Length: 354
Ligand SMILES: NC(=O)c1ccc[n+]([C@@H]2O[C@H](COP(=O)([O-])OP(=O)(O)OC[C@H]3O[C@@H](n4cnc5c(N)ncnc54)[C@H](OP(=O)(O)O)[C@@H]3O)[C@@H](O)[C@H]2O)c1
Image 1 (cartoon, rainbow, N blue to C red):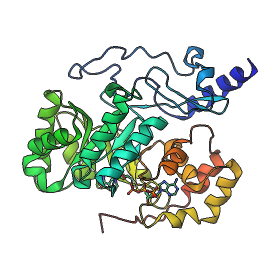
Image 2 (cartoon, helix red, strand yellow; image 1 turned 90 degrees about the vertical axis):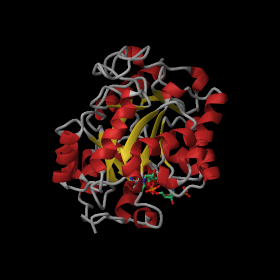
Image 3 (cartoon, rainbow, N blue to C red; image 1 turned 120 degrees about the horizontal axis):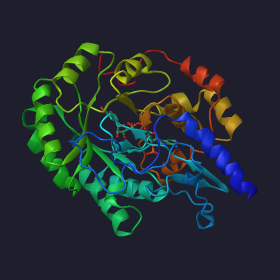
């Protein structure tokens, strides 16, 4: 009983940190008419309501989250993981798995392990040449009863050279993934020639029910490009996926697009392949990690989530994948958040503006 009380208090504290209400991943709540409704959507209880805290002793020492059970158990504690509510009413997990640079086989294994560990968001792209592996990992997890299609949120991207034929490029991605629909499709880089046309072709796929949400990627404080794309869009984008980490923070752009209800989704959340040691050896971050008995990777990911970002660390290592998801049972203090905020250098590791 005592444990339950502690769990309840912690869950309520953590639930107030994150912005959106918790519930079925990828399900619209209060959605516009054009968004297909699905059973169970909009039925989530209010934030912090005691009914949301379900302590299932059978899950002790497991990490598990499903749309019906939006919580994680870690040791003897239960914690909420809150999804973001997108500006079209769909919900999106705040932490997912990135698959850049993974082979088809690595992608299959990483996706499978991630879904087994409780992840519900997976990010891939046509350009990563691994959509087939991502699809196989999803299929394995579904066949083993670990997840259902409705519980997971899959993102892919249309590469720049396909902007002249974005609709058919997307159909090819859909076939490689082996899915009936994709939750989020991004234009991989904007601005690029034909970007508005490409976006409109993807809007048609939304109308056909093959895509749920649209987004943009690689816009860095380029408000004109954002405004142009936003105004051209008949179906508004839900987020911008950008390089974003403590040394290169998207704070101003986050505020700018936040006015329209869009989120930043962080790529290179750990600094990116080849750059992670800059973080992992940083004395300040090591100190914060030690204070919480966490790794620097976990501190970084916790920072992304607490700063209001969605994030998708990439990994082909099952231990890292599990470690990266174990960030919902602690909280960075305001002072620690401020310390990390002050690490911003304004320079990215793969800054596409340069
Ligand atoms: N829209 C875009 O233009 C764009 C560009 C780049 C990336 N992305 C997306 O963003 C995702 C994230 O970016 P990223 O994967 O390039 O970089 P990242 O997540 O910052 O870093 C990935 C690197 O960190 C290592 N790593 C992960 N977890 C770790 C842990 N707990 N401890 C130690 N090392 C760890 C990985 O190695 P191991 O494999 O050994 O774990 C890998 O070398 C990509 O996978 C992709 O989905 C999008």
